[in-house]
Length: 157
Image (cartoon, rainbow, N blue to C red; front, side, top):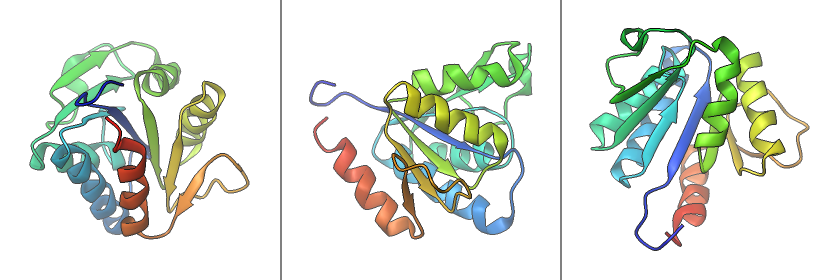
């Protein structure tokens, strides 16, 4: 990345989540939007919707890589819906299109995105993520620590 370029930061997580994870995902999205980076996500509900809501509230741009055939399936906070028709295979596009990934909680789809990201050499950060034992993933229990690491990873651009 050249100095001044925006990063595309993927936020990955479950399609439904509790209020605590929703709030955290929204704050992560707000951080991304506030720094004028681009949020990439799966474009649907849960963590994806909360992160996109936060990014939009922070003044950012959002891209939703959708599993279905219709751009109208995207949550209302997605600026650029990409309808793939690929179902879970879209996870490859999310990982490949992101400069780094932030996993928030999540289920098996999130695990696949983490694995793909690691396989192609992307940094993967995890907040309250159940998928432990992956040495390459940096896990965080506080948003402050996560934001500090995001600052470190994005400071040279």
